[in-house]
Image (tube, rainbow, N blue to C red):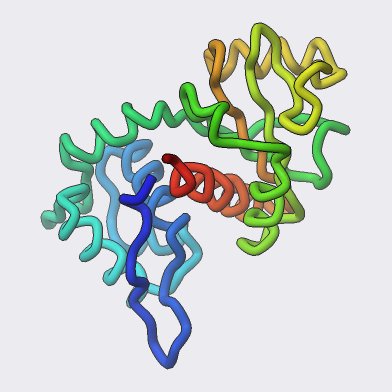
Length: 199
């Protein structure tokens, strides 16, 4: 989704934040309803200066507004998240994934945007995760790289299908990492890559 393409603010050539921080920030603010800059900075694990730049970007896009009480989303940001169909949560997927902590993001009706899930895995790793597993719902939950086979763990597949209210064409990207924060970053990075690739 081109709206996540941006000229990143930088200092000395290094970006102050990454595109996935934008989507993650929107999700964090939506969960909190209103949040302070310091708390948002801590949850994103970026510096306060970078967070200020990120908030300024969100305000420029009319996705957030700031008051003395904190930062909240605008109606256009909520519509954006609704249109994407984002639903995100920590999950426990056992042997399905590759590390101790897992975090999943659902995207509605985006199965045509993913191939074998290799791009998503690589993007998650660039963000500091151990990897990402991309699942697609086609009457059942299947691995994106093996669409004729279910995920091989019927109870887990059923739990994920219910938890994320999956319907045909939905995608579930599960980021994995040694910490929950790294798993979150991986999942959001893979998600943004998928949306940017939208035709």
